[in-house]
Image (cartoon, rainbow, N blue to C red):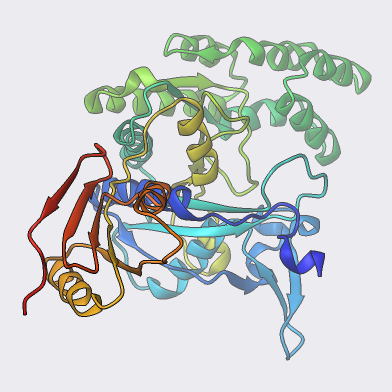
Length: 417
């Protein structure tokens, strides 16, 4: 019985004011997406396992929630929405040659093998710019992220931007095999540069490669670090990666958002399908990034259509946590009017509620409990974020309460006899 009363580890109920604020936040973010011309899309929560298979470069198979349908097909709860968008783009828009802008809201599910307080079900909102490999598309996505954060009142945040092609150029120049590459990525992901140096020594990597990987720790900052990175680039692939970042920064100045961008050339990307720029958004009050994104020029190709693309996801749960801890108010208006009516006053109460609803005002009807006083209903209204309360007494006298200010007043009787 105990298990029936509690949620499994890593998932939780969201209700009342918290749920209302979360939905209000999502509504504001979606409005920004729409202002940039993005169109809504919904993909299934359940997908075939192949959509997230290893070669796609998404979540490891051990972290997926897997099950079978009646025909024996392996299904999963989606851990990441971008591959679902890629699948849908390759089928629904297979004959479209012009770019497509898509946005979504949905829950993702990751069965973390080492649970450390992270939620296993999270809500993500994202945007995908499909079918455009331009620098302009890269810049638009970064600008959209920044404007989204500013719109909800977040001022203290940074968007860390890198390019996996630069990092890959170092890997290729060092001639690292797959196992060695994975180890170096892990060490750099943990910012363990001493470990990187020791590991490269152990496999007798060339001196220039060791110096290049060690220098990554210093290639974090403003536009000035790109010149240092370009001088460090071992080949044309690395040079082109840096020059693309310079072009993106130039366009971001037109948007007026360049001050929110920090370059980090050690970034390797959250997912294996990233091919160009990658970025993560950070702010105070949360232990993880609130935004994750990047370019994935070959992902949709795995589903049958060549279509270079870029996208990002905002982790709503992390964002709500950050806003709460920073004491940034999530605008959630007090909408409901609670109508309390005494015995014998149901007709007047229903008429009043219908009148409110015709005027597009929310009305919540409650028959007064003889054991509860007006102060109990006022507390109830405040707990559930109502804006006002109307109490119709047995005598027909009406008391109106402004739950925001606490002001009370008696108005004319509703008795129409």
